Image (cartoon, rainbow over all chains, first blue to last red; front, side, top):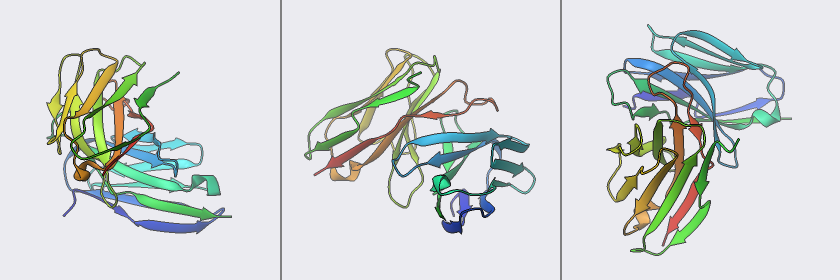
Length: 111
Length: 115
């Protein structure tokens, strides 16, 4: 079983829809990252959080440490949001080098 | 700001050839990482460094070597390339690994094909 599971694997939405991507993990963590990978391949850090909720523009990330679960929400989705969204956790028992990555959720927003 | 720069962007190697991938960051970050990304799999850590002159093995280190002679540069070497090393390679850096306000900065990736 993967230590970091994302759902769904693929998501197609219509422009304007509210989108939720989920991340569940099975290890104790010190931080969780949400990353965005565009079709061109570059990876950008969206959020890094260890508790609560963070908001940046139309993006909201939440984390529930007790339930070992995080969600990434996109409000008023737009075709430019089409990308792969990756969840990664830093295990609090692991080495300083290691992030554990999910396999990503591929989002396609249709106009 | 340049951020994290990887060179080259693309490379095709024949089995047995060697090459070095360069990662350079201009943010004075202590921590640097090399990952590989393969279809259907999450990013996997090859090697990492927690400061100038230090390196450590990650999850999939076999067939690769690294060096961090200068703080801003992290080199990934393939001594004898194999088709299994066909992948997209990403370099990343961060200021501190355990702080909540220390995001990762990624390079744009190097697409390597070994024939």
